[in-house]
Length: 193
Image 1 (cartoon, rainbow, N blue to C red):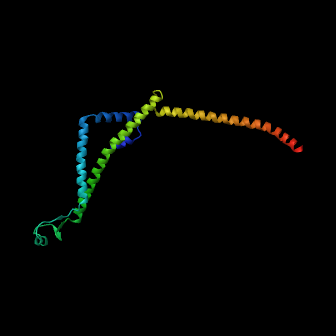
Image 2: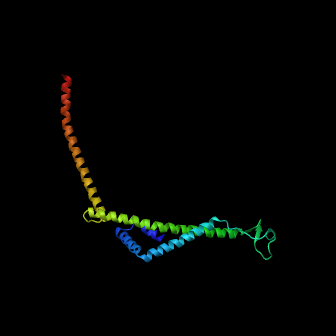
Protein backbone atom coordinates (compact mmCIF):
# COMPACT_ATOMS: atom_id res chain seq x y z
CA UNK A 1 0.00 0.00 0.00
CA UNK A 2 2.92 2.31 0.70
CA UNK A 3 4.33 1.71 -2.80
CA UNK A 4 0.95 2.38 -4.45
CA UNK A 5 0.53 5.55 -2.38
CA UNK A 6 4.01 6.72 -3.38
CA UNK A 7 3.29 6.06 -7.06
CA UNK A 8 -0.06 7.87 -7.02
CA UNK A 9 1.17 10.99 -5.20
CA UNK A 10 1.54 14.09 -7.41
CA UNK A 11 5.33 14.12 -7.29
CA UNK A 12 7.56 16.35 -9.44
CA UNK A 13 8.44 15.09 -12.89
CA UNK A 14 12.08 14.33 -12.05
CA UNK A 15 11.20 12.18 -9.04
CA UNK A 16 8.58 10.23 -10.99
CA UNK A 17 11.07 9.67 -13.77
CA UNK A 18 13.69 8.35 -11.33
CA UNK A 19 11.11 6.01 -9.72
CA UNK A 20 10.15 4.59 -13.11
CA UNK A 21 13.81 4.16 -14.12
CA UNK A 22 14.50 2.38 -10.81
CA UNK A 23 11.55 0.04 -11.37
CA UNK A 24 12.66 -0.77 -14.91
CA UNK A 25 16.20 -1.48 -13.69
CA UNK A 26 14.83 -3.77 -10.96
CA UNK A 27 12.46 -5.55 -13.33
CA UNK A 28 15.30 -6.43 -15.71
CA UNK A 29 17.03 -8.37 -12.92
CA UNK A 30 16.11 -12.04 -13.07
CA UNK A 31 16.36 -12.56 -9.31
CA UNK A 32 13.81 -9.83 -8.65
CA UNK A 33 11.32 -11.23 -11.16
CA UNK A 34 11.69 -14.78 -9.81
CA UNK A 35 11.16 -13.52 -6.26
CA UNK A 36 8.02 -11.65 -7.30
CA UNK A 37 6.65 -14.70 -9.14
CA UNK A 38 7.35 -17.07 -6.22
CA UNK A 39 5.76 -14.68 -3.72
CA UNK A 40 2.74 -14.29 -6.01
CA UNK A 41 2.28 -18.05 -6.27
CA UNK A 42 2.58 -18.50 -2.49
CA UNK A 43 0.11 -15.70 -1.79
CA UNK A 44 -2.20 -17.18 -4.44
CA UNK A 45 -2.11 -20.56 -2.69
CA UNK A 46 -2.85 -18.88 0.64
CA UNK A 47 -5.72 -16.99 -1.00
CA UNK A 48 -7.30 -20.17 -2.36
CA UNK A 49 -6.87 -21.93 1.00
CA UNK A 50 -8.41 -19.00 2.90
CA UNK A 51 -11.29 -18.84 0.42
CA UNK A 52 -12.04 -22.54 0.86
CA UNK A 53 -11.84 -22.32 4.64
CA UNK A 54 -14.06 -19.23 4.83
CA UNK A 55 -16.72 -20.87 2.67
CA UNK A 56 -16.90 -24.23 4.39
CA UNK A 57 -18.78 -24.65 7.65
CA UNK A 58 -16.34 -25.75 10.38
CA UNK A 59 -18.33 -28.75 11.56
CA UNK A 60 -16.97 -32.24 11.03
CA UNK A 61 -18.88 -35.48 10.88
CA UNK A 62 -17.78 -38.00 13.46
CA UNK A 63 -17.06 -41.46 12.21
CA UNK A 64 -18.31 -44.64 13.86
CA UNK A 65 -21.62 -46.28 14.54
CA UNK A 66 -24.77 -44.63 15.82
CA UNK A 67 -24.26 -45.99 19.34
CA UNK A 68 -20.95 -44.17 19.67
CA UNK A 69 -22.58 -41.01 18.32
CA UNK A 70 -25.42 -41.17 20.81
CA UNK A 71 -23.24 -42.09 23.79
CA UNK A 72 -19.90 -40.32 23.48
CA UNK A 73 -16.90 -41.83 25.17
CA UNK A 74 -16.09 -40.53 28.62
CA UNK A 75 -13.57 -37.74 28.82
CA UNK A 76 -14.69 -36.39 25.47
CA UNK A 77 -15.25 -32.64 25.36
CA UNK A 78 -17.27 -32.85 22.17
CA UNK A 79 -20.93 -31.96 22.29
CA UNK A 80 -22.76 -34.19 19.84
CA UNK A 81 -25.95 -33.32 18.11
CA UNK A 82 -27.27 -35.71 15.44
CA UNK A 83 -23.84 -37.20 14.81
CA UNK A 84 -21.98 -33.89 14.31
CA UNK A 85 -19.03 -32.65 16.31
CA UNK A 86 -19.99 -29.03 16.79
CA UNK A 87 -17.68 -26.26 17.84
CA UNK A 88 -18.79 -23.85 20.50
CA UNK A 89 -20.06 -20.55 19.16
CA UNK A 90 -16.96 -18.63 20.25
CA UNK A 91 -14.60 -21.13 18.60
CA UNK A 92 -16.70 -21.01 15.47
CA UNK A 93 -16.64 -17.21 15.38
CA UNK A 94 -12.88 -17.08 15.99
CA UNK A 95 -12.16 -19.55 13.17
CA UNK A 96 -14.54 -17.68 10.88
CA UNK A 97 -12.87 -14.36 11.71
CA UNK A 98 -9.34 -15.70 11.08
CA UNK A 99 -10.35 -17.31 7.80
CA UNK A 100 -12.07 -14.16 6.56
CA UNK A 101 -9.16 -12.00 7.67
CA UNK A 102 -6.69 -14.21 5.79
CA UNK A 103 -8.97 -14.21 2.75
CA UNK A 104 -9.14 -10.39 2.66
CA UNK A 105 -5.43 -9.86 3.37
CA UNK A 106 -4.25 -12.26 0.67
CA UNK A 107 -6.81 -10.83 -1.76
CA UNK A 108 -5.56 -7.30 -1.13
CA UNK A 109 -1.94 -8.40 -1.59
CA UNK A 110 -2.79 -10.05 -4.92
CA UNK A 111 -4.71 -6.96 -6.03
CA UNK A 112 -1.81 -4.66 -5.14
CA UNK A 113 0.63 -6.98 -6.95
CA UNK A 114 -1.43 -6.40 -10.08
CA UNK A 115 -1.96 -2.69 -9.56
CA UNK A 116 1.70 -1.71 -9.02
CA UNK A 117 2.87 -2.77 -12.52
CA UNK A 118 -0.23 -1.14 -14.01
CA UNK A 119 0.52 2.19 -12.29
CA UNK A 120 4.18 1.96 -13.34
CA UNK A 121 3.08 1.34 -16.94
CA UNK A 122 0.81 4.41 -16.84
CA UNK A 123 3.66 6.52 -15.42
CA UNK A 124 5.98 5.22 -18.18
CA UNK A 125 3.51 6.38 -20.80
CA UNK A 126 3.11 9.79 -19.16
CA UNK A 127 6.89 10.26 -19.06
CA UNK A 128 7.20 9.12 -22.68
CA UNK A 129 4.50 11.57 -23.84
CA UNK A 130 6.05 14.35 -21.78
CA UNK A 131 9.45 13.71 -23.37
CA UNK A 132 7.93 13.68 -26.86
CA UNK A 133 6.12 16.93 -26.16
CA UNK A 134 9.33 18.47 -24.84
CA UNK A 135 11.17 17.44 -28.04
CA UNK A 136 8.48 19.10 -30.16
CA UNK A 137 8.80 22.30 -28.15
CA UNK A 138 12.52 22.50 -28.84
CA UNK A 139 13.92 20.59 -25.91
CA UNK A 140 12.09 22.55 -23.27
CA UNK A 141 10.92 20.42 -20.39
CA UNK A 142 7.36 20.84 -19.24
CA UNK A 143 8.01 22.25 -15.84
CA UNK A 144 5.39 23.94 -13.71
CA UNK A 145 7.41 27.17 -13.57
CA UNK A 146 7.62 27.34 -17.36
CA UNK A 147 3.90 26.77 -17.68
CA UNK A 148 3.17 29.45 -15.08
CA UNK A 149 5.32 31.97 -16.99
CA UNK A 150 3.51 31.13 -20.22
CA UNK A 151 0.17 31.55 -18.46
CA UNK A 152 1.14 34.94 -17.06
CA UNK A 153 2.25 36.20 -20.51
CA UNK A 154 -1.02 34.98 -22.02
CA UNK A 155 -2.99 36.74 -19.27
CA UNK A 156 -1.12 40.01 -19.92
CA UNK A 157 -1.83 39.64 -23.66
CA UNK A 158 -5.53 39.17 -22.90
CA UNK A 159 -5.52 42.27 -20.66
CA UNK A 160 -3.94 44.43 -23.43
CA UNK A 161 -6.45 43.07 -25.95
CA UNK A 162 -9.30 44.04 -23.63
CA UNK A 163 -7.89 47.57 -23.33
CA UNK A 164 -7.61 47.81 -27.12
CA UNK A 165 -11.20 46.63 -27.51
CA UNK A 166 -12.41 49.25 -25.01
CA UNK A 167 -10.47 51.98 -26.87
CA UNK A 168 -11.88 50.90 -30.23
CA UNK A 169 -15.39 50.75 -28.75
CA UNK A 170 -15.06 54.33 -27.44
CA UNK A 171 -13.77 55.56 -30.79
CA UNK A 172 -16.61 53.82 -32.61
CA UNK A 173 -19.20 55.30 -30.25
CA UNK A 174 -17.75 58.83 -30.74
CA UNK A 175 -17.86 58.50 -34.53
CA UNK A 176 -21.36 57.08 -34.33
CA UNK A 177 -22.45 60.05 -32.21
CA UNK A 178 -20.99 62.48 -34.80
CA UNK A 179 -22.81 60.72 -37.62
CA UNK A 180 -26.15 60.45 -35.83
CA UNK A 181 -27.20 64.16 -36.05
CA UNK A 182 -26.64 64.27 -39.84
CA UNK A 183 -28.82 61.21 -40.31
CA UNK A 184 -31.56 62.80 -38.19
CA UNK A 185 -31.38 65.95 -40.35
CA UNK A 186 -31.64 63.96 -43.56
CA UNK A 187 -34.55 61.92 -42.24
CA UNK A 188 -36.37 65.12 -41.17
CA UNK A 189 -35.86 66.61 -44.68
CA UNK A 190 -37.21 63.48 -46.27
CA UNK A 191 -40.30 63.54 -44.01
CA UNK A 192 -41.02 67.18 -44.92
CA UNK A 193 -40.83 66.47 -48.63
